[in-house]
Image (cartoon, rainbow, N blue to C red; front, side, top):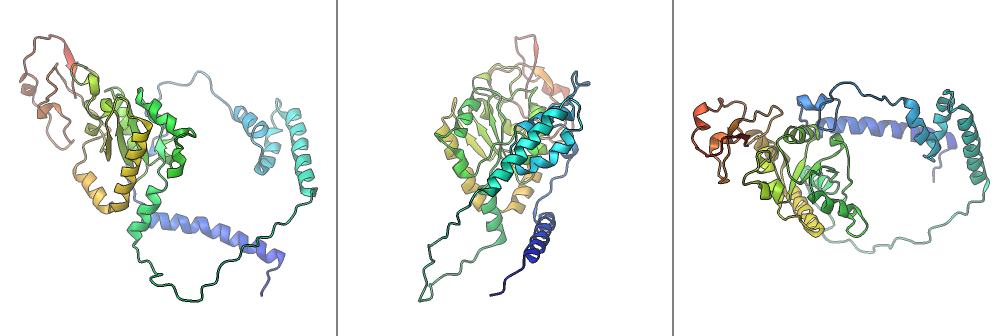
Length: 340
């Protein structure tokens, strides 16, 4: 059996660790879908454009407290020389570095017992029938997507309380591969939990545009799907989030239970396992019903819940809504309200 020397193992590790990121970079360039847009290059990720300068600017020294005194990891040793350059942290960081290095030395000198694995793999004396599984690259990509859905924490009303309970140990949605993210650039699933108002509509669309492809949407709750109890006479509620972004799964309820959310996630996983991504992109381009430039029109209040086609959002390529449309419905209410 050929054994590598110590330096050979080091060079092999260095070469492999360098080739893996390069290989992943080139593979992602060929396989990963791209959705370039103006919101992809924006520097803010909260959905709201910053207004003015911040009253209080946090310097890098503020974050060094958490990195040096809270994080206990081997990589923290490389931060100590940087932290000692600050006058406020100089002495305390030096003492912290001595304690940290002392702990590492003590742990290194302790006797480590080598645990041998006595479990042996069984030997197959005969050839297993049908041992070859044929698959496609599309099935492999779908499997990886449905196994690692990262939802964006987006909640505007009481429905988000039910979704937040999934993070606990009782429901434990980590078993489905779900990892909650606060940044839209790291998420591929958004659960719109709660009422979506017209003021929040541009922010929601901006967050959706910043999410990488492929991305999925679950409309959670009656207020998100149809406007709920606000759909009759509210002047600021969007009657259905599907007027802004495409929805994959509708989850009715007021509010839905955590078990219902798990069922919706399961249905979404089944949908992802059967989809063909090029067809999905083509369908979104043809039926695109959202844009970053929202142009809400002013019209009379309508209490019937049925809207004329002129009041719904039109794609940018169509002409503007004629003024005659707004006077089609006469109402006794004199105040003008925004309708979607």
